[in-house]
Image 1 (tube, helix red, strand yellow):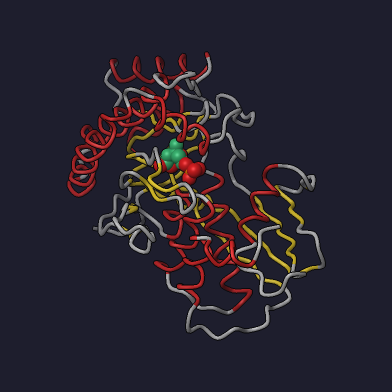
Image 2: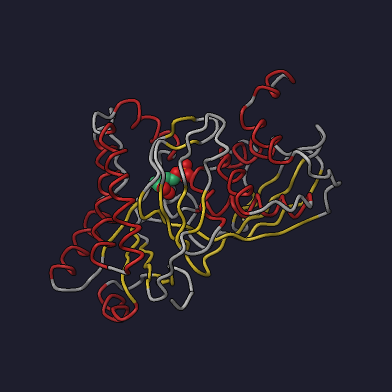
Length: 343
Ligand code: PMV
């Protein structure tokens, strides 16, 4: 248990105090629920400049997946906190529940206040399909409803970032940029939507292995930043990729879009490969899947892949190629991305 002095100094608590300052303190409702979309980074967030506040070294850019939401219900209950994930009760000492409780500590208004959280994910949990991002984004929205804070999306993005960095991007639909910010207190490090849409962009989720990842992205990032000799090239790579990606989205240039997203994902994995000891998320199945995507492209099909901190692939392509891609990669879960605007 941390002392009141430690709590006073904790920078995450300072962020919460600052955001909630001036809001009326309502006693919480009995229950609340909310949802938030899964997001996939097109230009990745990899490496923190502050571990306690999840402040990133670089900005990043993502797309939210339409109709693929985490749904979360929260209730106030007697101690201890409880978590149900996809219908399964999580053991009290399990890492997922400890992490959740640590986050909820930021919001308790009395020492014996506890919460029961039930969350349903549309994608396998902790397998590199960004379930923690949509999970924390849905959770801060549910807390906002429970306590009737009425925060705006930027404020919710700042709070979600404290749970999981990439969660700050799941507060918006369509294309989203997380601005790294420069302030030590992180108040300028939040996501904002990009003013572009691409209605016929599609993402295919390819589950190569639904098992949970062995190394958390938090640990993997830390080790990469501290030990990888390739990490020093990462910020300049990201800067160039962000510029290329914004332009590719603005002009709907699928070739440039695909090359940038695949190159960026592989560059991120390259920084990990050079870490000591090496971090290697793709299994044999993922490597074979990557080869099949490259072969399809060599045969003239415009399709590219991305990968995060897990063995699974996300394919990006346009609606007119959906039938060909569905036939070539059976079992792909295909969802719209890129927002629904008509421009
Ligand atoms: O937000 P975290 O700690 O789960 O890290 C996410 C890291 C990647 O998914 C690999 C990249 C990203 O930008 O989402």
